[in-house]
Length: 224
Image (cartoon, rainbow, N blue to C red; front, side, top):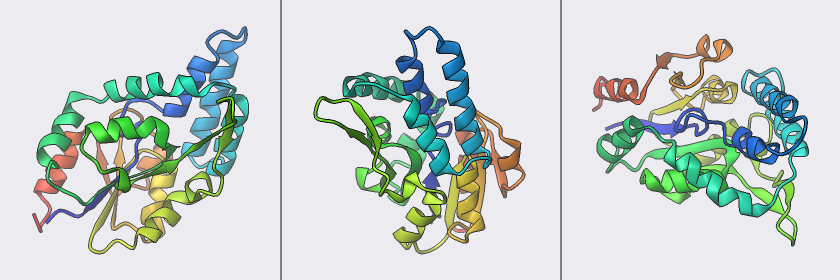
């Protein structure tokens, strides 16, 4: 039997950071587009590398954004279309009948669910932030009562799942390392197909460069 697999989403199941892609759309028509996008990505990286708390990184990025809710569906569809065929094949074949798969992400459900649904992952196994909108459909930040908007939010969320048996955390960011270091995963696998962060790689039990590497790890697992 496979261990429980917990995947990050951005830069793990897709080759993008969803919020960064939203920023690209929002800043497309402003005069200082390049400067704003660079600053936005810098804040993202500071959070992913552990230089900022996740809450600070998220708050600062959301404060830079002003957009309508109508932007979200086409962006979510774009992200869904960006999933590599190797990832699709892995979930549709190797993991097709396997239920112990979770997505725990600091990203946003509105951008994540179309992709996870296409991979056959139950909505009830997807944990992420949610946007807040005013009555006119304008972005008003996010639900900061959600633990995933806070520092060590993945740790809290996974702790609350009360999972039994062996747990593997698979992701590319500092918050993914914290799950293993806090004792709520038995193995942390740094996923490096799309981005390599030295501060993350040096904390990993295993480095996976592709879903094929994850497949090999599962095939070699003693209980499979």
